[in-house]
Image 1: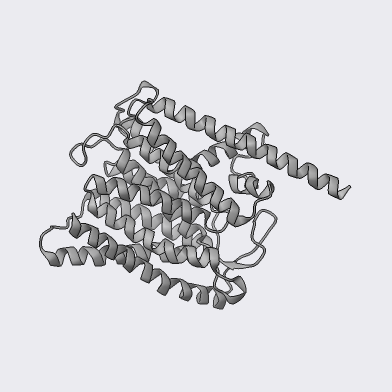
Image 2: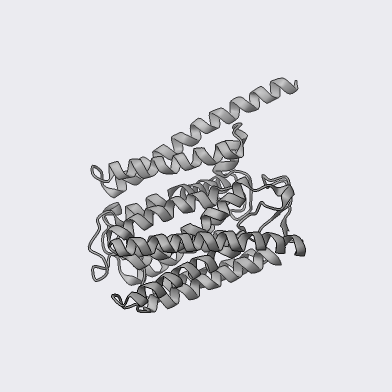
Length: 369
């Protein structure tokens, strides 16, 4: 175990180094090719910012992962094998990554991206990785493949888009991903799934330099960058994969975990709940469900008077609160009860936020009059 902890640290450090090497070069490339995210009425930023930071994510993760696997092989104590799901996972990931990259550079229609997302998501159940147990949610336990397969595809596509849509202010998608990845890293480590831990550490490592340039970088010095679709879609796909993998009841791989699905859901609760709420609001107002607007949680917090960094901290604290409360509730409540309590907390939070927005709007109106 101590040996694998060391390998995990090596993977993390190697990925951090790769990030600090790749990202400045990406910034220079974007400046040379004039590849910027241009501000508009829907976006928060006011300056043209390079949007290809996500290009560094997958290469850095893979370099760290394979370098670490090489060190493990040299030790001679462990045999590294390539499973069918591994091949399908990497094929699906590369499809998502390439589509995101193309969209960042030349643009793609939503339908084209959506089709590729579905095809990539299908790679998981085709390889035998799918939701096969609800662990008592709504009184349901084991579910057959013909139900688990489409459910898995739907959830994967949903999470991919949730991570993409919540990428609206500096650091938000990256910090939420870092938090979720840390939770999965801890969970897989407890189960002794060290190759997953090493892979996760490799992705977490590159997020450190990205968040540094994204949050603290200065745009006028060409040192600020966004992750773009290549980053947010790739993060979403990897988090969705980890969610399905940890939630799946496969006792040949991991022992039965009563809270397997609860933990996976909890780590992604903020982006998932945000997309559900925004979609319901659009349906209520008879607006196209896929039409972009400024009604996400970060937009509402900023309308309430908080700046970007304050908004980021509030959302991260909210995500941590859900993790804490669900950890406590897991010992006392059924899964269904946990989710109902989470929904109630989410609704109460937004009702309080609406009060702040209304007060600020009234104050602004008084000042203008």
